[in-house]
Every structure is written in structure tokens, then in C-alpha cells.
Length: 127
Length: 411
Ligand SMILES: Cc1ncc(COP(=O)(O)O)c(C=O)c1O
Image (cartoon, rainbow over all chains, first blue to last red; front, side, top):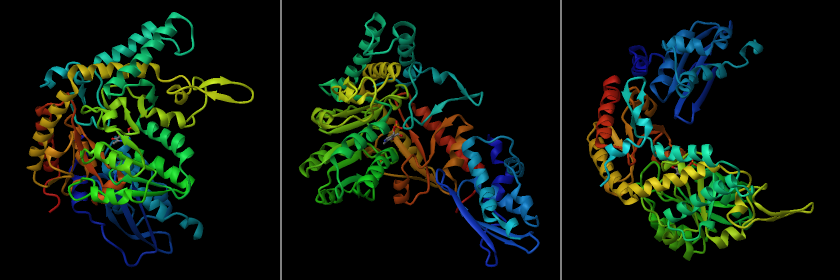
């Protein structure tokens, strides 16, 4: 489990690239894991072709949830919305470079994906 | 003085390795304690030797099992210094005990506009049952605030009693701050204000001598699993007059004296509140746990925990970036919750786990208290009779490793 705290995760926790707020955004959402106190807010800018142009997060919580948010945003910027909506638990674990995570920590890792999916919910149908 | 190294041999769990190689450093007894072999044996022996349903059969096994079950109730009554064991109801745990009072007493005797007085340091199990009742009945809830040092504000308590609450419910010891409340004085003042008093004893009965009759609480609740006993069994103590005035909590077998096509007549206490086949083996295991604790001595356990707590408090207080919640070592039970600057409790707990150290991370079922303290979550180490100074050293080293893994995070 020590290797859970690999350089990648710690680096993204300490120095997140995609943390902040976005004035120009057309989708946002926030959610929390009340059990742990993890909180994630996301602002996303989606263009008319359904491509995610920009995305940032803000929030607080454990290293896993915050690093997962940063890594997730890094991977989805430039991607079409429907691709992101089909991302799985395994995709998030792959981003984090983890094979196995206990059930409690899995919730931390998946919170950012849940927030992104909620922010993008219903976009396909609108367009 | 007890010898924790010796006592550890009574607990088979300490023979196992964590993650295949680490010795177990168990610092999560406030959540649930480990079990000595004699408790496991008592339950095994029942199943292998004397098992049958209780209070029903007229045969040797049923009579033996019934006698063991009732004998356990007597042991537990003596353990908390209650003369009449019929005032002890077997429940599943502290939570069920409190719900029983809310449903069987609160529903019958409280009415719209009544007030109840809780505190800001309660466990969810002494909040949510009252929220449910309050919503159902239109009852107002007040909270005695937690002051600077983590103690209840006794002046505010006195003020709030002037609103004439019908019920005052509070914890004997906080599972987050370690604060031990002055139960006897608070109960006396609440009685003077005309209130019925419920005390949550989940963190007190396991750790120091408690005389429920001296405290004079009307209801007192605790769980076996935090005091070397099995899960699935707990106690609600209630004064006879109150229990007799209450309606049953659940209906079914055992709780009736007579059932006809027209209705039923409830049984006497405590059976009135013990519907259905209870956790027989667990009740008997609970009795064995009480025997075990008596043998070690509750005062000795308390003294040992005080030593460990004092040592841990002093060591932890020296760790840079670590902030302990609540009062000084002299003024608390064996629980220390803390924050580490820049590192979330989940991360702390996970890295400690990789070293075989079990602590609790989160809000410890006291979300409102964490909100009040303005701390999203904390890490908690809690101590019991089997913890040693070496356990504390391992914790402090473990925390230093956590800080190393995270480098110079924070400020
Ligand atoms: C102060 C306090 N009250 C109540 C409880 C609830 O106990 P149980 O889960 O056994 O019902 C606990 C245990 O977590 C506690 O620490």
C-alpha cells in the first residue's frame, strides 16, 4: 500500500496543474464524500462540437481524491463529451497507476469522475 | 498496575501479522475492542455444550442456556453497580438502546412543543434518534455548546435547563475529544429542572468504574463490543418505574405475558423489551467479558490508560504540524484525535496501516462536533488495556513516516 503514494499522486496532490476557477465555463458541478470530507467542484468549457475545451477543479480532501481530480482533468481536456461519459472505474485506476484500492478509498478516487459526469449530464441529448 | 504485555497474550488477534509481515499496533479500540480468548471460549462452549432457545423449552439444554443468559445479565448489573438486574435490557448495541428510549419512552410521553436538550459532542447515535422523534412529534432540540478546551459549557447547560427540557441526553465520555463529562452533577441539575436523563456510556463503561445508581441517570446505554465482548449485544439500563410505564418497543415472542385473538398483555421487565430470540451466545460472551475486565480490575485499566494517554499526548504534542483536539492529557480518557497539517486523515491512516498501525480516520460519527471545531476530519488513536508504550512509539514513528512520504507539504 505504500506504493499507493507514488510520486505521480503526491506530485499532483502537491502541485495540481488544473486547480482553480474558470470564468468562461458552461458546465459546473460539485459533490462531496461526507464520510471523508473530500470536496470537489469543477468548471468545464464544452464547445459546440461537444469537445471539452478547458476544465478546472477546486476543493479539498485526501491525496487520492485531489490527485485523481487533477489527473482526470488532464486526460479529458480535448476529448469529446460522450467519451468521457463512458469512462469507467478502471480508467480512473489506470490514470492513478493503481491496481487495487479498498472500498473506502475507491470512493475518494472516483469522486472526481462522478462530478465530471454529473456536470456533463444530458449534454448529448441537448445537442 | 496491570501488565499490558502479559494481557496481550489473552488476545489471539495479536498473533497475526498485518499485510503479511507487520506486528499489529491496534489503536482503534474506541471503535471496537479486540476479544480475549475466554470470551470466544464462552460462546463456543455454549454452542458445543448447552445450546437451546431460552425462556421456552422445558428440557435440560433450554434450562442451562436460560440460566447462563440470565446469569450474564446479573454479572453486567453488578458490573455497573445496579442492584436489580431486571432494569437491564439486552439490546443490540448503544444505538439500539437509545432508539428504544426514543421510541418506547419518547413516543409515549413527549408531545408537540416539548424540548429536549442534547450536547454538541454527541455521537450520531445520540442525535439521529432524537431528530427522528422531533420530526415526528414537533419537538424542539437544544444543544449545550462545547467550549474552548473541548469541555461542555456548564453555564450554558444551566441556562438551557431553564427552558424545561423533558429529556436531557449526553455522553459520559466523548469519543472524539476524550472529555469525561461530570455526569453526576449534570444529572442532578437536570433532575432539578424536571428532566429525565439519558447517558450514553459507550465510551465510559469499557474504560473506568461506573456506578449507574450513584450517577442516578434514568437511562444508561452501552455496547459489549467496545469492552472485550462480542458484537450484536448491548445494554439499556432504565429505572424500573420508567421501564414499567413505557410501552413495548417491538412486538413478538417473549415480550408477551398472554396473546389472544383480541390482543396481548405485555410481559414484565426486562422481557417486555426483548422481543424474539435474542443474541443468546453474545449475551453469554458479554458476561465472560465482564468477568475478564473484573479480573484485570477496572481501576487498574483506567490507571493504565491514563499513563498511556499521558505518554502519547506528550509525544504527539511534540510532533511538528500536529494539533491535538480537546483538552490536556490530565483531563481526558484514552482517546486522542489530531490533525496533521497539510495531510488528510485518510492518507495518514492509510500510510499508518501499511506499517501495521490501526487508527480511525474521519469524523468518528460526530459530524456536528467536527463542524463546530471547524475540522473536516481527524485521525484518532484510542487506547485500551492491551496497549503498550511501544504502541505509542510505533504511532509516533509512523506519523513521522507519513510526513516523510508527503515531504514538505503544507506550509
Ligand atoms: C460515544 C458513543 N456513543 C455511541 C456509540 C455507538 O455505539 P454502537 O455502534 O455500538 O451502537 C459509540 C461508538 O461508536 C460511541 O463512541
